[in-house]
Image (cartoon, rainbow, N blue to C red):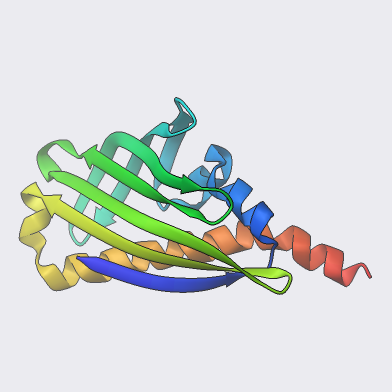
Length: 155
């Protein structure tokens, strides 16, 4: 399943890039994220609990960054096992562009699931994945932008 999207974030590209590489920021933004630990500059481990339709699953897995091109973008890949619920894999190519004092974040994501989750039906899965992606990027913009919004108000 492929998902693409664009979001305007009210912060300079350097700040958005730094946030995309900060496990604390990512932990706040990933829906259902219980932990995200940095192992190296390109790898993290994660624990995420999600409810997809009637199935609630806890996933443990790893996140890898590749094609790193600071501050223009990277590819982020994750894979996790949810035990009896199945597995999930996904990747997203993230690109950043300046837009005045803001940044345009574009992403092209692909995901794959297996096990019980795969039996739920394509429409339910696709709707849930799109919703989770939207939640992540909305929250990401909120986490980064408040400082920019406050400094603009203080002028």
